[in-house]
Amino acid sequence: MKHIITVLALTGALMSCNTSNKTKDNAEESTAKEASTDSTSIQFVTIDTEEALIATSLMAAPEASRAGCKVIGYNDAGELVTLKEGNNEFIVLADDPKKSGFNAACYHKSLEPFMARGRELRAEGKTGPEIFDIREEEAKSGQLDMGIPGATLHIYFGPNDRYDPETHKVEGAKYRYVVYLPFATAESTGLPEKPVGANHPWIMNPGTHRAHIMISPLADNKE
Image 1 (cartoon, helix red, strand yellow):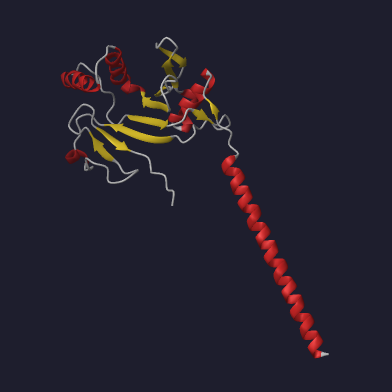
Image 2: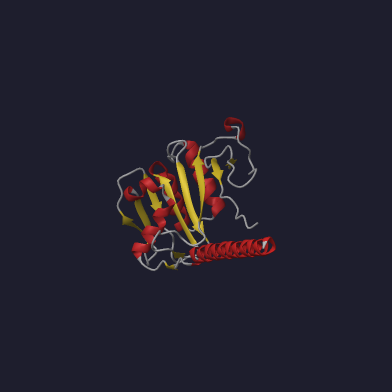
């Protein structure tokens, strides 16, 4: 009789163990399916309307400030026009739909003379080095207003021109931040002149009108 009871007890334990394992396996499988669904459920669409262009370009601005940002961008004729009026300290330069990928910028309005001068010179056909030299001379002479020291530029960029209409996030886009400190140097800031690693600040163009603290995005971690 004791032998029979022992066998029954062992059988019950095995059945309970098998049931527990199956439940655990089913739960893990369900979780895996949910994770898979979450990662593939976003339906990215092409940025093909002015409304979508404005919404995605505003992603370059701090979230709390997006509603009050002025947005400027290029029309089909290549003219810079106001796409959205604003009432705060930021100006957003929308992505140029004629160029591949996505690139929108948000900058403090005190930087507008500097930014506008660059666009003007570029429209005249000046090269990058030529624009740098012209603005350098004009900034040193006081002719060019470089804005408030510490004014920021936020860049939202990526290789794709599709976005999630629910969140307005652009597929694969990342952030880069710039803090302008005209004529600053490594000595005056204590920052290195070369990046130590992703997401670490460093000073670019030190000693010039275009000196700025650069903070580049973290690299993708695929491990």
